[in-house]
Amino acid sequence: MLTLPNPQHVYLACGPTDLRKSIDALAALVQEGFGLDPFAPSLFVFCNRQRDKLKMLLWDHNGFWLLYRRLERGTFQWPTGREGTVTVSSRELRWLLDGLALEQRKAHPPVRVEAVM
Image 1 (cartoon, one colour):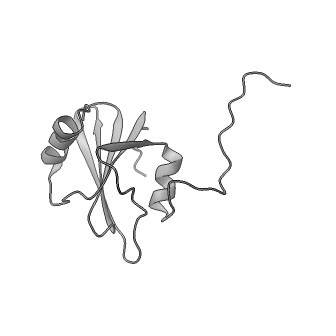
Image 2 (image 1 turned 30 degrees about the vertical axis):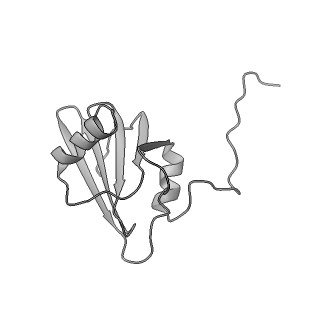
Image 3 (image 1 turned 90 degrees about the vertical axis):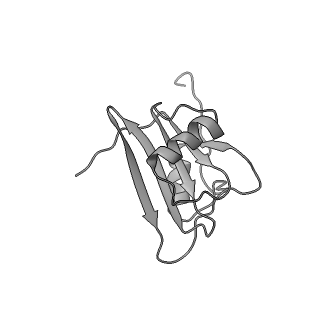
């Protein structure tokens, strides 16, 4: 079984991305287009115009991982109407990968607790 590093941040590239781009072109987009560090322990996720394909870029120790996902049916509920990136949690990324929207009204909201009662 393959185990990938756990990223500290997950960034979604808002709007469509040309997924013909290679690792180098996506890393350049992260650095120059979004002002982020492609070598940071972060996952950068890109979606095509039809919203049925994703590419995920992740730096690991001495090289990049490039993961590709193609849906046979359906589309991803990709954020639109924004520019740049959106930071999401790993949980929200799983929602997107499962075909759900980022804003899940029925999901339990996170609870911040500082002491046991």
